[in-house]
Every structure is written in structure tokens, then in C-alpha cells.
Length: 109
Image (cartoon, rainbow, N blue to C red; front, side, top):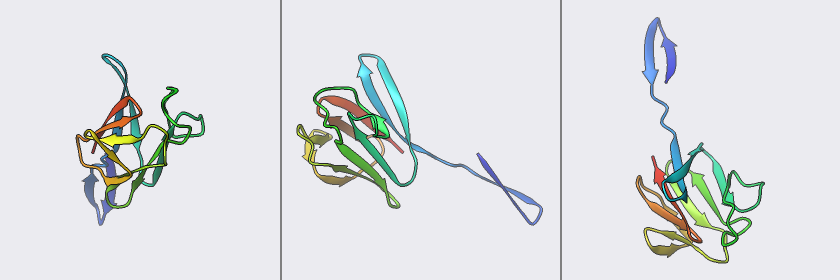
């Protein structure tokens, strides 16, 4: 919660942060906050979201926030799928199911 003081009035603004919930194993997941801007996803340690799986490309995909969240596949070897369909660039909505070469994730906004 962010508080803003304006002419002796307190205005509270909720700061909602989107996040990606990645399924690591059955019943085990990890949540990654998605700040405005770019979020890189892949196997290399230089990514914002690192997915340790040999099927995931070194630099697999990218999330961009431009008033909405967009997911872009970075020409990965095994593809990126949204709700079961292979994608290149797509707008995300709350609850979308993403598959990064066999690694399942859910987008929450």
C-alpha cells in the first residue's frame, strides 16, 4: 500500500503487482513478481526468471509491460505456448496458462 499526502488528505493507492507462478514440481511452485518494464525468462543465470530445465532455451521468452503485459517467444528451440497454442507475441490476461518447453506457469494480474 502506497500512501500519498495531498493537501492534508491521506490518499491510499493499492500497488498491484502482476506475478508469474511457475510449477517446479507437483504441488511445488515459485512466484516471480513482474515489475513494469521487461522481464527475461530462460535457462541462463542472467535472466530475471531462471528456469533450470534443459528443454528451456538460454533466453527463452520475454515479458513486457506497456499498459498491458505482453509475452514474446525469443525464437526458443521448443517454443512458448499460451493456453495450449504456440505463440510468438501475445497480450496476457489474468489466469493465462503458459508453457515454456514443458515448464508450466500461470500469469496473475
